[in-house]
Length: 410
Image 1 (spheres, helix red, strand yellow):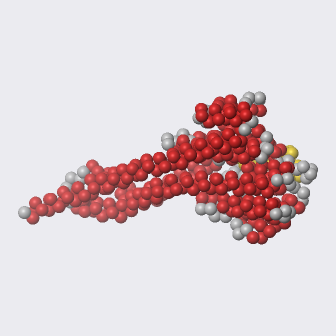
Image 2 (cartoon, rainbow, N blue to C red; image 1 turned 90 degrees about the vertical axis):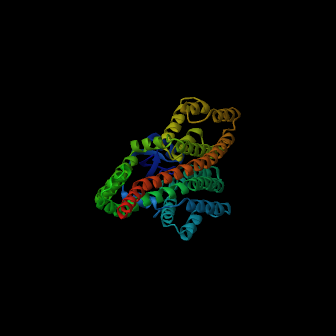
Image 3 (cartoon, rainbow, N blue to C red; image 1 turned 60 degrees about the horizontal axis):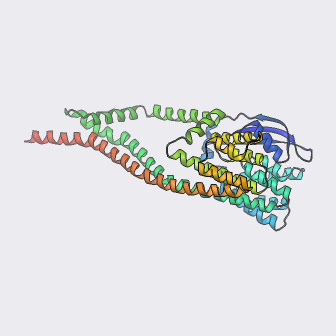
């Protein structure tokens, strides 16, 4: 998704401006209209890739965590349910919350509320903290007088998202640790171990095996040109990340991720489960179909799948049914399409999509377990191959040197 700068007027006629994530200008216009803002100008905002911002983002430096937003939503639910006015509730939270970026955002929201802007529009001025899902649910809660229930649903959604992320981390923790250990071991071997053996081999007149020659040459290259390897790696990472930061690059990267063998299918199911659950939550809250699709297209976290959902939005806008537009995307399995058809025919699409989300989540659990079962033997095989190469490249010549020395003594 891209960032779009907008200017418009709220329901009270006051000028507002801010930044929103969106798949296209039209999706941003739809989102603004859904939260009661009449857009005047919507322009794409060109974002420059910053290596330091990227590092801070990955290290969670000055970043609002999902746990912070869950706690905020839970507290807002409790306070609004108790009948405390929104301004007073936000003021109290701004004084008690420790996450400084969230505190700063809440203070900005308070200023907007005091100037006459509604809560959804005020939250929408901070798209990097409050997602379109939060804004849409708060907008519905404000219009229906059920703001407490809206924050409760937001908290439930974020808690499910947190559980999904935990499952992914648990499945990938072991492979990442083993892969990192292998890379570090290879670096240490090439820098410290192989050069010492290379000196011994250079003083001998023994013909070295091919494996040994490859190891020695590789080690020499790493020792002599480590600065070039490091600089090249940093340059490649910076160029790739800058490309991914662009609209085209992000779309191509997201498309590549869902097409990776094994892993791509898991990622796709995770995003489709997110689509099903978020759409069901919005539909049950009374959000119109087209508006829900606009929000969900941004919520799946993948531009490739987001474009497919935006195509569903376009198809329904032209008069097609939800099920046929979903079938045209070729994202959903026949069983899921059948369940959608039943939900559309009976008017219980939200309940059926909850079933779809649970179906996908069960598949995700099974796939993550199977992926772990596949990765472990592959990693063990790779470690064994590494040990074999070292044995053939280093120990065989040492044994040869030992035999030559033994013959000379005799």
